[in-house]
Each structure stands twice: as C-alpha cells, then as structure tokens.
Length: 281
Ligand SMILES: [Zn+2]
Image 1 (tube, rainbow, N blue to C red):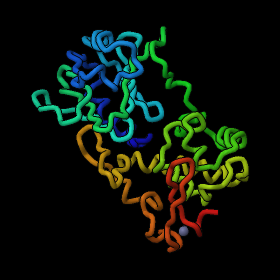
Image 2 (spheres, protein in one colour; image 1 turned 90 degrees about the horizontal axis):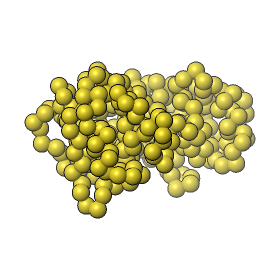
Image 3 (cartoon, helix red, strand yellow; image 1 turned 60 degrees about the horizontal axis):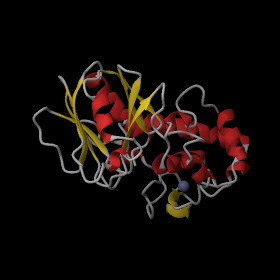
C-alpha cells in the first residue's frame, strides 16, 4: 500500500503541474451499479457536477491521503488503497486498464486513477458541510511535523494494550505509516514488533521516534518504496528507490545488514512483521 513517503512523492510530482489548473471533465469509466470508488459519497452525478470546471488551488497530503484543494470550499481527497496508481498522462493518451477515474485538466493532461483491486476511494470533502462519512482530519499526528514529539508518541503508546507493531499501524496514533515503514522504524529502534506498546522505556520511545522520522525522510528523498509487487510508481510512472535501503521488510531469510542474523517474520494482528531476532529485543 502506498504509505506516507509514496503519497508525498506523488504530491510533489503533481503539485507544479496541477496548481492553478482547471478540471475540464470528469470521467468515471466503471458504470456497473455505481462505482466502488465513490462508495462513501452520496451521488456520482453530484460528484461529477461539483468537480467539473473547478480550479485546483493547491495539493496537500495528510497521512496517506492526497488532497486537491479546489476554488470552492471543497477538497477532493484521493486514497490509493492497496495498490492504486495516479498517473498524469498526455491529453490524447489511452487510459490504462483498470482506470477508475479520469480528470481532464486544462493545459496539464489526463489525471488517471488506476486501481485493479478496487480498494481506492475518492471523496469530495466540504469544509463547511462535511458531506462524507469519513473525516480524514480526525487522524493522529503527522510524524514529520513539529507537533509530533517523543512525548506525544509516548503518551499514545502508554495508553494502548496492544503490541507495538499493531499500535504503529493505527492511523490515530501516528498517521501515514503502513507495513513497510513500521517494520523499518522498529528495526532502527531495536525494538521487537511483539513488544507491548505500554511497556516501552523512555529511551526506546525516543529511539522509535527517531527511527520513524529518519526512515520517512530517507524514503521521501528516494521517492518511496517500490516493493516486490512493483505496483507503486509516481505520477510519471517512475518506481521509487528506497527498496534498496530496506533492512528487514520483505527480506525474510536474508541476512540482517547489521549483525548477519537471519531475518524472520511473525504474524501480528493479521499483518506480517519482519524483524531481526538479534538486533530487536
Ligand atoms: Zn540484526
């Protein structure tokens, strides 16, 4: 799933090309009994009507959501689900298979949301009225902002009864982390994914805080992680480069780059955690 660094990379790629541009047409190719893409939005017709002709003021990111701020009081929120791609293609190009949404944008091209597995969603969020049932702004802190501190993280971790891997995946604790960056942050902090969140020491919380920050910053610098499924690409179709820096994620059976022990996995809350049994206590 695209996580914070991948969505940030997509945003940075699209921002200079979409800022100030007008959405001329909105096409939702999947017509079979209402699109799953809009499953939480009341009406496809009103969605299309409200978007058409709108100018994109700016693009932002919140957690794993891409936010297109429009010249109305509305924000088009895009979530790429498990394996969605957002490509800005030239005007006359043919939409790739599994394209669920096309925005024809004047003097920019066709913004295509491609989503074979249909876990992606779009919402039109009105700042005043709140049309949608999901409010992405009730998420936890953005880990790269100043408001996220070791104290903030520590308070949340102390309250939880679950294991640390599961707690870090909770978007209300830290927003934007998924399976890749929780595994990598825990490795950097030397913390076993099965540890109780409430049992971490102050020093461990500090190391985890640093681990989260570092891994996200490095991943953004390398344009995200294109994992073994090769689904993630940026808005130009380019893969990320952080996969070469992964220490444990999807490296089961390989040697730990720090100590040489064999990387193992454990199932926790339905997710697979990758870890080094020697470096992570
Ligand atoms: Zn190790």
